[in-house]
Amino acid sequence: MRTLPLLSVLVGALMLAGCSDDLLIPDFNNPSLEELQNNPTRVLVNTAAQGLLVGTRAQMGTRNGYVSLLGILGRESYNFDGSDPRFITEMLDGALDPGSPAFGANLWTLRYRNIRNANILLTALVEVQGFSGAELEAIRGFAKTIQAYDLLMVINTRDTNGAVIDTDRPLDADPAPIVGRDQVLSAVAGLLDEARGHLQAGGGSFPFMLSSGFDGFDTPTTFVMFNRALKARVDVYMGNFSAALTSLDTSFLDKGADLSLGVYHNFGAASGDTRNNLFDPTQTPDILAHPSAAAAAELKGNGDIDDRIAAKIRTIPGQTQLGVTSSEAFSIYQSTSASVPFIRNEELILLRAEANAGLGNVADAADDINFIRTTSGGLAARTDITAANVLDEVLRQKWFSLLFEGGHRWIDLRRYGKLGELPLAVPSHQVNAMFPIPEAETLARQGG
Image (tube, rainbow, N blue to C red; front, side, top):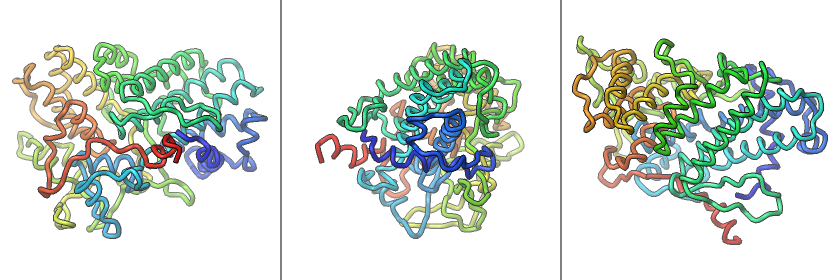
């Protein structure tokens, strides 16, 4: 991965944090990259740490961002943007284009930019004065957790096409190699474990303020639970089911707590802040729900549809574009300041069910599955869950529980070789299994 273009925008990424009412970060007279690298101060380091949170939410709530594009590929959503048919022609009806910055080549550069910013921050910690040892450890644990999250988002899009894990090379070095999915996931898991060690030595508080999306997880001690939640997701993705159960034991999984308990990306409606553009209150929205979810949903005992579908999807006048039709839109995001989850309690319970299913612990998996069915869906418990159907039931509940929250349907079906189960609205459509490596990255490795 070439890093020269990324460094030129570091200051802009940091200054975006100054626009967030939630983070309440002042401008600090426009600190420069050189100051952070050559003369780091407590103020500059704290600003850089807060800037990483802004970096994580980049392209999460945009119309051609992570939730939206992965939702299209996983047949959770459509985008009927009349000014750009590529939401159908490229995402559904053709191969993803590695030269298309808004589509096939998307969801790469900004993630690596944030990872690079974290590397610069970590280097600055070696020289900075004015922090206690515990504070420095807290910052290291925070930064490495964010790096792990960003790298996970990259490999979730590229899968077996791979990604870069050597992200801290000198600027004049050759581009770092692209390595395989398993090596990337191992690197993510390693970063999370390193971060946990730092956080455990991080004292009672962070020296900077986290956004309200981290309420309840905003000290090193509680942030570890978020770190372990992410680690559990990675463990499950790697098929390390016993490790996943261990990670979940020290996460914030709690069947006695609200299922929405978790950590969230915050957005705002104030001038200059980043908005959640997945929200569209109009009767003819661009972003529509794929009809398959409501069609597949079970009915409750009173004949009403699964509570999750009722809460997330609304009926609208039917729309058609390029042969694709939907009469359903989302109500999951209620405003431009609506939060998008990093990870929440409901997913953790289902990850435990998936891990137990993978280990053959059918009764334990069924217990968590039925808890989600009854508590989140308002459905009756299933009494016929067996080793033969437990995985399909886990994936079904994850589909409804995590619908349009982060591409989970596409990622989950791909992991189990089930992408062929996704419906095709038009016979010419195909299911793209992964994003390509951006053309610029490939050319850089070919000397182009």
